[in-house]
Length: 57
Image (cartoon, rainbow, N blue to C red; front, side, top):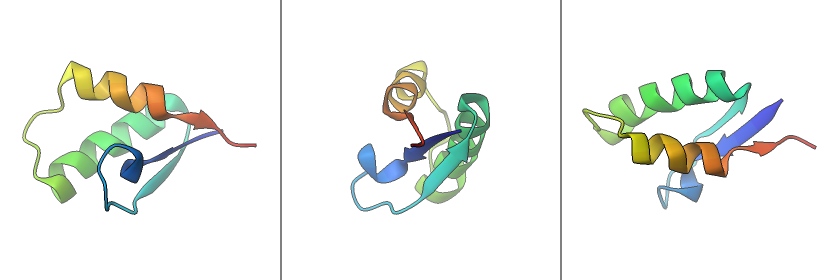
C-alpha cells in the first residue's frame, strides 16, 4: 500500500490517495482534471506524482 498527498505538489489541496502506484496515478489524473481544471496530465506531472508517492508504514 502506498500514499500520495496532492498538497505536496499543489499547495492548499488537502486531497490524499492510497493504493497501488497505478491506482493512485489513475485517481490523481481524474482529480487533476476535475478539481484542478487540468485538461492534460503531462508526463512531467506524472513523474512528479510518482516521485511523491510513498509507502504506507
